[in-house]
Length: 184
Image (cartoon, rainbow, N blue to C red):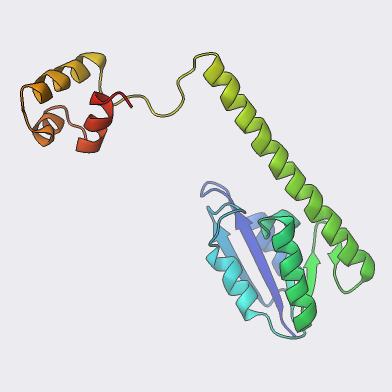
């Protein structure tokens, strides 16, 4: 009966120390980690290794619920798998212990609110970008070529010069040049 810990941080600048220290204090036998990987990423090698190492009677231990699951559906699917295979689930900061009915209920409620929070953040981001576009803010990377360089490239293209040569002259990729010349 092993206690398997899992810790994750979203960016490479963040540290796993807080989580791993708490998992060690919770007597985890092994700790798997993912660094610089978002919760919604399709592939999280550390999480996948943690899940594959679990056997009947083992426990998965997290520092915090949002470190592991992409969505409420994903969390419920994993919990169903745990129940079928006799695997316990504990979340240290939120007091979740799925060996109890109250723990399972709290697990489901907490995940529903976590998913709601991610959806609200996404909705606000989309609304903010739309408002910025409406105000005329140009989003994305700045153009690699100036207006003068684009005019020069158009003249050279019209004169029959090869686009690869023009791109080299302006120190840009050929695809970048095509987009600029074609107004995209």
